[in-house]
Figure 1 (cartoon, rainbow, N blue to C red):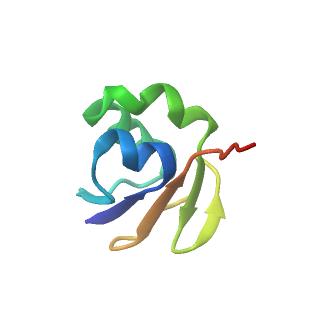
Figure 2 (figure 1 turned 90 degrees about the vertical axis):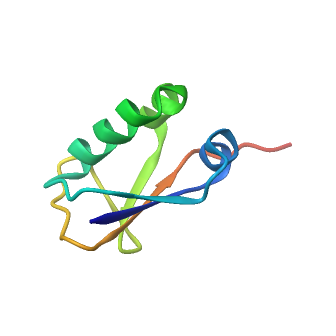
Length: 78
């Protein structure tokens, strides 16, 4: 299993901070699974930074079993 943590607007839309997902080999495949499960945030995912075990990674990054993934949307303020 992989733990996915949601931050910022993603957390607000979903109303949860984290969920568990079956293991996926790459970050891209995991993000695609998140988009399938939660179409309401799918549009925000392309601009979202991704981290695996607190290290920023790209969509093609390998995901080890049991890792924690953070989805970090861009932040704006005034």
